[in-house]
Length: 287
Image (cartoon, rainbow, N blue to C red; front, side):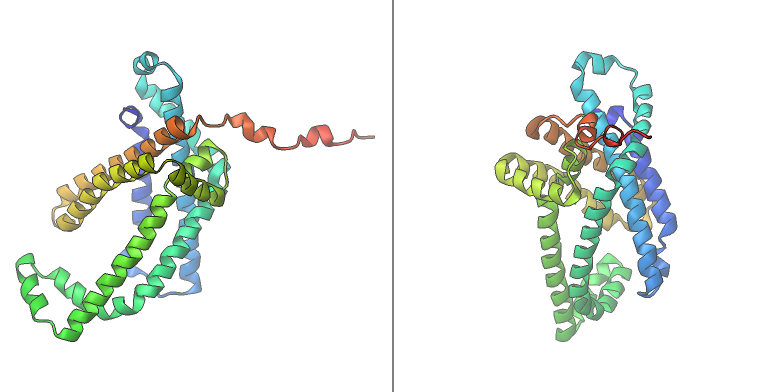
């Protein structure tokens, strides 16, 4: 209901998809260098800024829907109310950019470490996997059967290491699933928010696991279908990508609803300011 009445949440994701699609050309990735690392850092910070603003919009949509009577919320001009969510974007960037940059930077380091660990096996299996991907599905089985024992071992080693790496990252992702909620709702820093999410898993394992299962049962089938469909059918690829954007909005709304209804109501904006010393009051008067 919240995501359907706040369609502007999709606009930000669609803009991000178009922006990063134009900035990243996977067919022309440069070799690893200082320039490439700097370019990647700029993209990471840009992504963190967009996500900080977008998650703040999601949080404000949830607060607005849950803090007013249901009949009043349903009677509002939801088109106008939805457009007003854009007012929460830039304040979210300014307030939560540091925390989002820190968490996304840690994610990039973890993924880089796992990628460096898997890289040797990937280099051996990559030519075989690329060739298998270019063949029609009917010919792939024959190609796999024609591989030598050493080639099959190379592909099997890469598959095993990739699954282990995906499992490690998946567990970390699941345990820190609620970190955006703690950052925006409860004004915690990025690292503390990740540990708070782990603590919430220990306090409420049943509902936490149920939340993860909902996300997995909806997200994994769409991911597999998108991978099987490929770019051969342009209309189907666009439809699946749009469905994925809607699913991302639903995921974000779901974790913020969990935080609001299970963890507790969010801190008011003035609570953050109340913890800061009043520099004007502590400044001695001018002579």
